[in-house]
Length: 52
Image 1 (cartoon, rainbow, N blue to C red):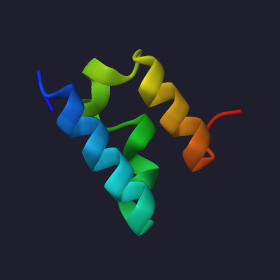
Image 2: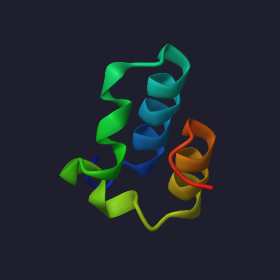
Image 3: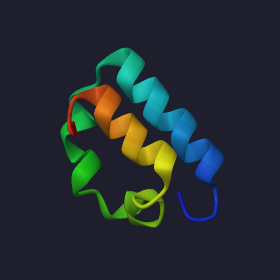
Image 4: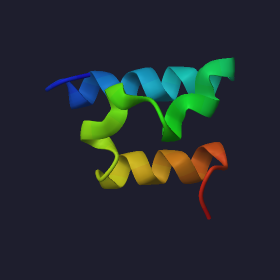
């Protein structure tokens, strides 16, 4: 996901839509470290039910 934030968010949306079992990795996967502080990522966590 390095330098490809738009692609990362497309992947996250697909993960959510497909309800993939990898969703549990959202908060710990090191490949997502560079987008964790982005507002869209935080909104995605809320959408997926990981944050309030």
